[in-house]
Image (cartoon, rainbow, N blue to C red; front, side, top):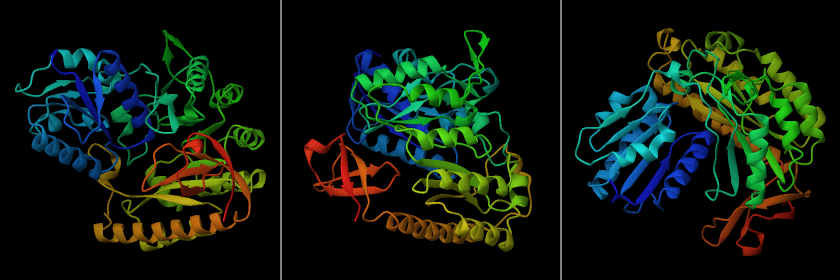
Length: 425
């Protein structure tokens, strides 16, 4: 398929997917492809999917239909979690030419060379048990902040989650290789790195060169802190049971690791946490938040929470709402529970009606708005450093303080990818 020389990408889902899409893009560009915007006409379209919610599945289908209308002769490649979980379902979507599972997405260059439009969709996948290697990835030139993948897969067995089935066992890069990637990014002018993974705090597990590594996330954080040229690190998301006290203390004393934590909670009710098979209770979560605020009163803390999990009664939800209301956190990412095939939760009864799930979602989103408003107001009058991003809109530009308060101001070229002292008002 030598005539295919342009490629466009669309990424659904998490920061990890963005890092992988960017890496796949560089591989194709190195092979001679010209990268285009997804809304432009291209020879090949690559959609990197998520399958955390039904919406991601639906969005994938809508994107394929859009490509079919715009450019029916183009090749369509689907990869990512949805592609690993339901390859046959994706292959049946009209217009799809290639489905790449978890083990094959980084072999995309070779697969595309063998592809011809008009044949039935080709599936290149394997059992998730056979996926046990780690592929280093990072995003660059896509965003001001670079997402650096340091860990993949998950050994946890939460009853609502398909990620272990989509990404396989927990495995990691080495500390030495992550540090080398950070140095390379610093040489390319990157100022901020967001560390990403499926279960970031589990860093250190995994097979590398046939040998088992015994490294820890804390060791990684310590070594990255020494890298010259990187001004900021953020920890994208870390389980409360893996967020050790030594990590919290280290971040508090670091000039480079930002006072910003994102800690999944999922429910503020211990009974529901038990049914979810989470590895902590809400008391531990509250302890971690209290310790962060003790060492860093100015720290921003984000929370993932799921509403409408099976058996979640009004009392359970009110328990979660009150717990979050009383907790010194800054914002929420609220997910409406959706049934996923082959999960334990799909058989847990009774099921919460969909309209009630949506009402609870709205209630927590309103709480999140109030929390962020209150957090921001606490810092009015302070001067904090803001890293401004390159892409502007309507003559404006955006940036974030160290503790993740968004700042919007008229666009100034000299501020792009630079740290600027800013008085919050």
